[in-house]
Every structure is written in C-alpha cells, then in structure tokens.
Image 1 (cartoon, rainbow, N blue to C red):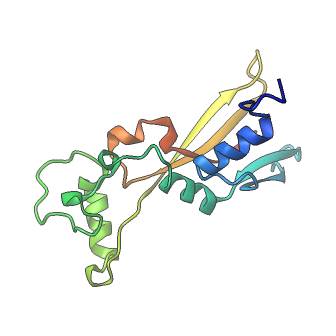
Image 2: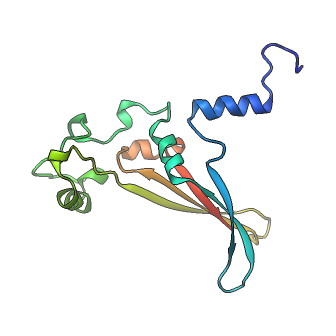
Image 3: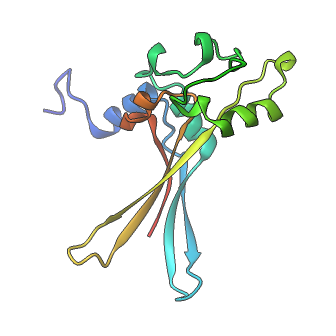
Length: 158
C-alpha cells in the first residue's frame, strides 16, 4: 500500500492540507495555567492570532459574495443615511466607530473582530468541560459567518 504511487501518508496529507488552507502546523502552543481558586495546573492550547487571521483571510473557499462592503468596495464609506439595519455594518455602533476611527484619505478599512465562546463536555457526566474561544471578521456577511470554515479557534480552556 505504501509503495503505491497515489498513496498519501499521514505526514504527506497533512503537509498538503497545511499548504492548501494556509495553516502553519507550529501556529499553536500549549501554556500551563494555574486556576485561581483551585490552584490546579492545566494545559491551555493557544493559537497565534496573526497566523489564524492570515488563514482566515486567505481561505480558498471564500468567494466574492462572502464579503460585506458598501458598493462592493472595501474602501467605500457607509452611506450618509442608513434606513435599514440588515447586518453588522449598518448598526449604530459600527457607523459611529467608522466615523470616529476611519480616515478616508488614508485608505483605511474598519475590521471588526467577532468573538464567540463555545463550551462542550468531553465526558459522560459533564465533569470534563472544554471551552473554545473562536473568532471571525465583521467584513463577512451574516450568511458567510454561518459557515464553520469562516471561524478560527484561538484556543481551548479546560
């Protein structure tokens, strides 16, 4: 089997997937953390934010319809009058933040980062919970943010 021309070993397959999805295999580390009340030492998996951000922005599954820009232009400012709240970029918080932080003459883009915490149990009696901290970007549409591949995990907390 291993000598067959089309055989993909695990290391070869992982290397191919790392390249395809622009994920660096060393983009994470395991930190030891002491919990405040129990003084228990736990291992916490932490991913490098810059590596995950690059992976998210260069994911080959992204298409033009996934982006949330005014007039389909990332440098286009919000319209002067927004009558309908339809997605993250039409809410009052977004519009006021854009007004305060973005200088049109400097070709800037407002890049909201949306965080999500997802807890799960890993044992039969819920005694081993693990919580994932995930993020995505506010430049993706509401429909696109429902796609699991447009979220990245920053780490896990036991």
